[in-house]
Length: 269
Image (cartoon, rainbow, N blue to C red):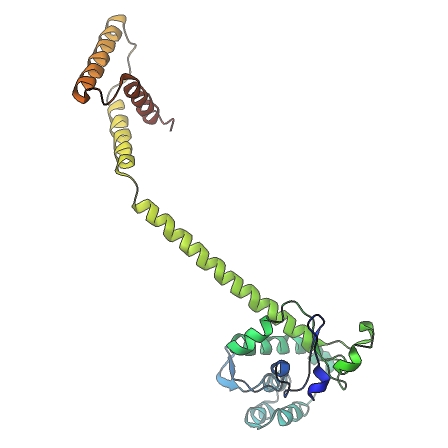
């Protein structure tokens, strides 16, 4: 009944009949194929079948579970699920929501077209507008629901399960994008490391050699004579460098370079 699931662009998304053109896929009876790692040999053909099969397993009814797998319609699958014995609300109520939520996660995560429709609802409220079901639905058609205060709606468990599935899939896709971003950042870092300038490599070698030299002999107090001789050698070295490089490198640059190299050697970098 498409009239029962009329939607506007700002309010909740109402769904009910599998025949609805856009949101019929939210129905438990929508035909699809998905698997569950818990039952690796089974291909489920709709979420209702998954729910009823799990129900039969919960109450240890293997014969009914087998019949549910070969039943031709969702209506027949649902009827078989109601035949489980001994049925107990105390056993079923704590597990039923998780079963339906998982079944719909498998359904939407394994069918791309369904998944895109679900994600495209954004953060809208999803509502099963079933006038005969106030547990999984709200107990009203979409038309009536718009005139009834929401506090009078039913539990809408199916709508809530679908919204949980929507969030889970969205979070998973966001996580995959973050991982891809981290991988690309790491690749860029690796490339930068591979392309380090040769000067950086030479500096590291210089530091290593200098440290090795400094470890050869203990440092002794410098005498006035040795200090004078060292200054003379430095001046001669500088003048020699100036002559060899002619006027390309001035005295200030050479002193700056020596000061920089000295700080690197002593770990000041």
